[in-house]
Image 1 (tube, helix red, strand yellow):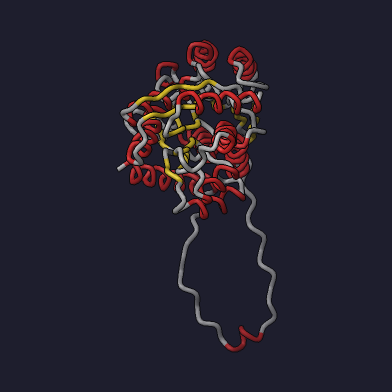
Image 2 (cartoon, rainbow, N blue to C red):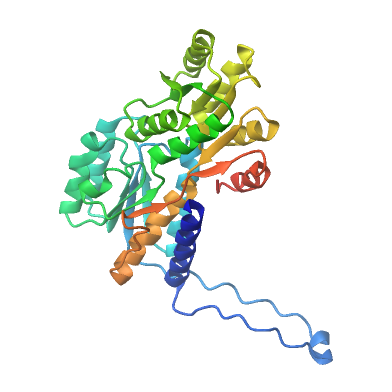
Length: 345
């Protein structure tokens, strides 16, 4: 049911992009037969594609993740592609680290510049709520993406684009439970990020077994790997879930160092080249993909449509346009790798 719903949403978004591209719809007709004279005629150079009409619209995207991060670089690619496709101007901003005080300041500065629309992630509603409400009260259309599916409506945000994190964690737990896992670790690189905390909670509920959260600091990869190695040795789990690719790689290395690789089930949220390689090699069971490219792309399309038509696709009755979760396993990892190499997954 979930997959049918997602396909329907993305199909609707494709129609939106086509509508925004111009007034003339492409028409498909059968090609006429070529005559002998036409076949002998010299080839003519095809006319260049019509340029996208430029709109006098300026949007700002503020996320808690930096565009240099493997995950967020793909989201930023989506933002850039939508900027070009919609013919609008977009600025992508983020704090230097996971710093809610700095992120709130960036949002405040964005509001002061009076953009035509604002896209935000909401990893901590308590810290960011006042800044987001100020944008709404200033009459700026606001859309949230990635994190904040459970709080965006309370802040006056129009619609959320992403996945519901608890349910995604629930699916991860159910998958691991079906593999026979009953004692697991949840590697959390941003304890206090409501979205990641919800993933661990959903994972525990879906597994129906024991789950211990292991906090790690990814700014210190050596320390993160050491912390995971210590947890593996002392708790002897039969499953490990990382909450992102930058957490999955230290976990993979830690399992190899303590001799548990291939003996303990490993999975992660989100994708990256090393994650996809590990899935293909059988060293990782699966990844939960939230399709962050679409999380960057769709809000820009939606804001453009809102300005041009006054309407906004809501995705569902709870106003969440789902981009995931989508399961990546050894069966489909090769196809996903090809998209990842293009910066699309």
